[in-house]
Image (cartoon, rainbow, N blue to C red; front, side, top):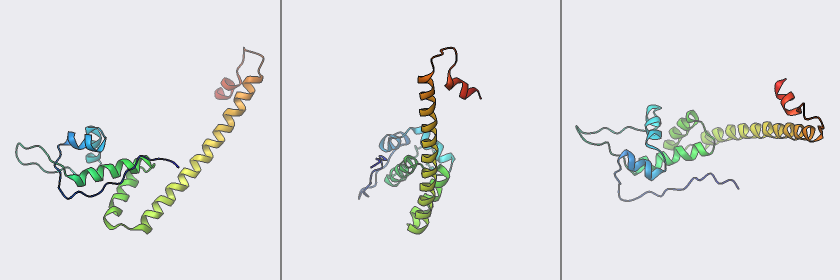
Length: 144
């Protein structure tokens, strides 16, 4: 089984308050990652009172972990934006369609990697059979 590193987060009765640095640490990301997500409108930028530091809550930790888990599963930020919308409605049918499309992409990538593996295996075999050090079958193939 492939471990994506995704964890389940249980809701907490007490609402936490985090600075952006604390939030980043709690979610295991860099502060610049959070700012990037904010620029991409994937992550909220809380308002701040005059002269005050922006504060984030536990729900933002959950959202940030959701985004990172989805990335580890191979979803693009555009797809994650769709998933975040579905998080509100918990639509299994729509989510399943997105996941099925992702599985198709994964299967295609596996086929591509298997073909690439076969090509490298053949090239290495040609190289092993080559008694002439003045030419290399691998370099010749790349130079085509």
